[in-house]
Length: 111
Length: 117
Image (cartoon, rainbow over all chains, first blue to last red; front, side, top):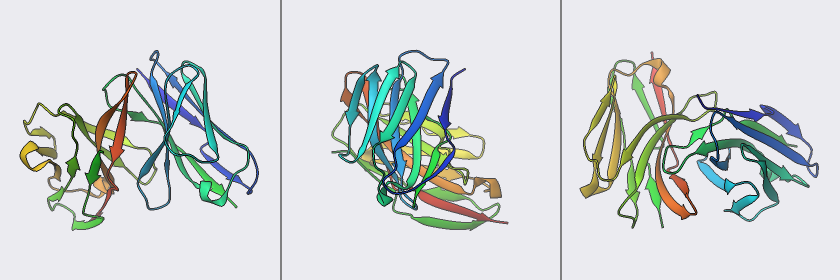
């Protein structure tokens, strides 16, 4: 069966510090991978998606970036965090038109 | 452009009451999928159902049922005999094909359901 992992689960970072969130999927090959952000009390915003290694599409211009160094690994990064980057970050995977399945999320607080 | 509207921001019901969560969508695609997800306090989104645009049959799964009406662009979700464990935020979502084999989800803003014992 397929599983999706995210780490860390929680993170508190100062403004201006770098960020690296990791997502890995097990039990499937060549998945589509997604990063979403959910600000407190708000809906989900798609940040990036990837259909293959090295292929990244950005939905919202911002100080975040994403990379896919391996088939089942998706990384969300920032060189300098802003206060507005605080939120709940969710990684998801899917194959073609199947549902997107979500990971447990990372709760990021930028102080 | 795709759009999903969940007009109910918050709903409170007493345990064992039935509750319906509304979802209205907009799309120009003739083929699309609709979804419902549950987000309990832990935060993880749990997939509940997917409905193909060509299949308007209503579906029942235990205490959950879904009513898909293409004529009104609605995909409503009913919980029968609600329980405290149903307390969560529920999201309705719609797919759009973004090219190169990738489908993107457009989410509604969610409905927070509180079931009071």
